[in-house]
Image (cartoon, rainbow, N blue to C red; front, side):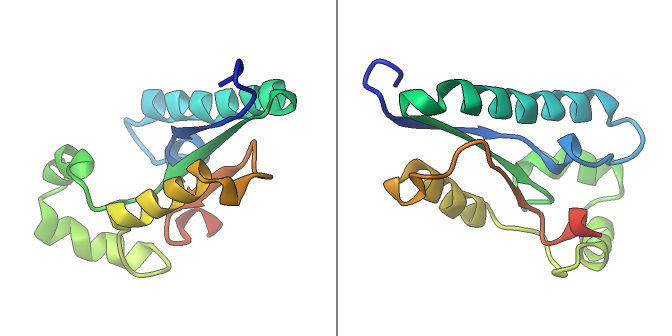
Length: 127
């Protein structure tokens, strides 16, 4: 990308890099904060060379990634209603919602966007 003078890099972080998720999440949260900072650093380093670098930070997204945590908390029947009550939009996100954001960032439609951290969490970190 640097050689051709254009490109778009997207990192996938997590709201855990922005806000604490609670107990037993410190290592994950620190890793996600590092992804966010790497995005910021590379975006300023490479902006003048035509390479855009942005980060998507999802909240609760209905994917298999969360299955181990959901199982530890009592399974979907216990966890889903709780998630729906503490996420301001009242629901988990869907994978295709994150995919559409990624598609935008990969396209020339976002040609002026670099160094941005996109939070897609249904309003959870806005509280």
